[in-house]
Image (cartoon, rainbow, N blue to C red; front, side):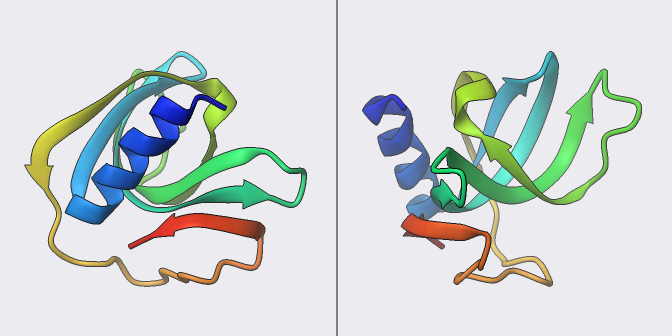
Length: 101
């Protein structure tokens, strides 16, 4: 995975900034919380999805996004101020954690 993407997401988590990206053809607005590697050794981002455009089946809430499918990543100037219910900074689906909120 791109070190630039990992660095940008780490900064967004640390500053509690929303990120926006395209994932499987849909645009997501996400509060990023956890960046790491899953059990399949894929880099991924776990965050609270607040909105997805053009995705009728998209839900708000906790989601994990494989970074290999993330396109057009943007860090926004908009901040989030709280951690959503259910956040686990030691997520057991992650074998390695790079950065956490």
